[in-house]
Image 1 (cartoon, rainbow, N blue to C red):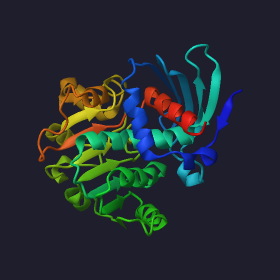
Image 2: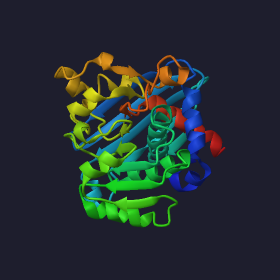
Image 3: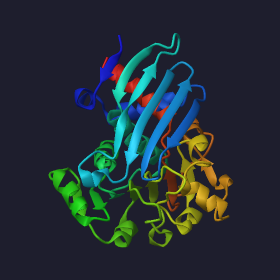
Length: 309
């Protein structure tokens, strides 16, 4: 029997520590086979992400990404994930994509932060005010108990204010701000979850010791960090295979000679396995590119299936 798992029926059964543990365990398995397909114009894209991991099985996530949907009151990303058994290929679950993507995206970033940010980080800046930003508040708060302040910035300030209002009473101080440069200069961790196609975050603003978590740029024409920031930082990614040659955050500066592929010092397999040192000094600026990827979707889908079993 194929299980149909919806966001509303399952989200309350999942935890951020459980999601991070699923990603750690998944990276101990053999390397995945991954294939992505993008169709349609830049602002109205169909994205298919497929994966096979030995011992875990097969997964295909198909979603549409429509940039203008927020103005229509419709979700930007819509779709579903199909999960197939590793031994006989049976379709075992159809999971609402919103559930997989929300948990995967925030868990990916927060796992990166646990490996690269200073453990005593107290001030988180979130750029963006959409669904990803919403889950980042929850996920970072759950994994970084010393957070005292969460600053919210968005191009449309009213949306940042509305996000702060929805989280009134949070244990950390939440505040929407209009001056991004000032907020970035004060933050210990900066997480960007925007639809920017040109850099919004400038390296000249970032103080030593800051960890920068880049989420939003998921295609070849998108960036959130400028050249100066990448040149100043120790750069890491969740997966070399799904980021270095595919995402504008890296392909554009590499093509321009600003950085090289060798400047990406490691990915999750390197960091979790201990083969590469993350933060070498408290004063290091670290950059983590959250590229997502079908392998992470499959790891989280497996976690969802077991947690809701």
